[in-house]
Length: 211
Image (cartoon, rainbow, N blue to C red; front, side, top):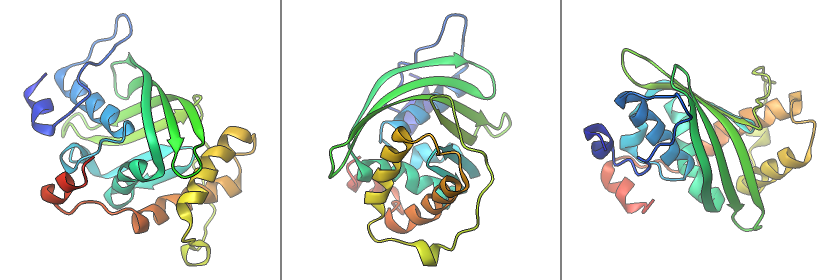
């Protein structure tokens, strides 16, 4: 384990790579951070490896900037009662770093279990060493990046996490996720989650969350 990994408290340090793929210490640190985040193990220190204007994107959200992407990671433990990584392998040691990921999730409250196969791309700034974007492509796919303008005041729902879980179920059952309605859902998710998920203000609060 490198000094940087120790300082950040990275838990996933045994990184598997495909044949012929190698990572330098900086890349290993970033992959370890991303694996921890997908496992529902965020921390303020780990998220400092992200650029303030970084982006996280998957089929149900596109979160731009620290105020949007941090709550997405802290929200995993709120939305899911179980998160189990079944497989991971780094397939590309360039920029972006390519990562195959298979994760099992159980949605809180309704007990819906879903296994997601992802193609994850980790983009980073070679000068600062910080993550600028993470794309989580379920079954290798992401919706088109265009968005329909939606008023959050009109569509804000206090039962968001129920609908958030519904979104996961809808995605797995529907062939119409790459639509204007789905783009709207992704935008609503990105701006709503920060209102419902508290991000620790300091390391003491972070430790008290018990993640």
